Image (cartoon, rainbow, N blue to C red):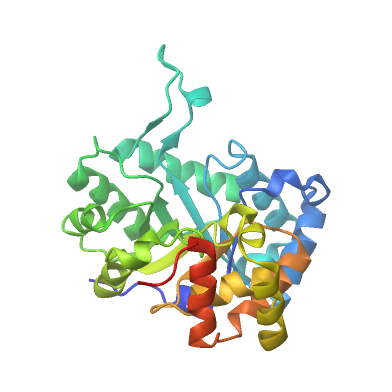
Length: 293
């Protein structure tokens, strides 16, 4: 099997583009290109997309920014995902949210993502959700063809459980590079149920979405603990949450949803800090609201 690209190992953060349309000041191509270049100057070169983000408009805006400054294309890496059909995009009579991982559907999704992003190759393409109706052999053969054609550099999954990704892996000569799923100080179940070790055992990088717990962690941490932690580490709650996450074995990579420069800087500070072990557990206890067993 071809070894997966190591670019994921080299980035401390992935910048999620899901909320791009919440920042209308950045949707003009030149403005977004400037924002991307500022992030590249900070060492952040990996950008996470999906076709459902802004109903494809986030990919389109990003592609327009790259077209306005073509020199950016060689400096960044793009992840995108497909396979979720929201109810509003279901053209059948049922108008039901559903998943699609058929070979033909994903083949078309890859081509359309390339067109929207104005790229010749997607660095990492993910199946967005496990589809219980998926025919793994057909689906993986289609993704292999996309890799062979140079449309995709590597493949991975999103929101998959270990036996789900292992079933896929049995049907392809390609290594699965990563699994993107929820992980944060406020969402720790997978740290204790063997899912973390499954990622490590199978060689999948964990891309952690919602690493700040949807913004709820600041309220979940006692003020006195936050003050003491900041005094010792210099980190605010954002930095503490990122440092806590990155300290896990395998150093899961946070997919940061915020596009605010101040939040990105705070998160970057967290990637550079190792928390004292007692503080790591104190933060865990505080959010879980019960002591370590």
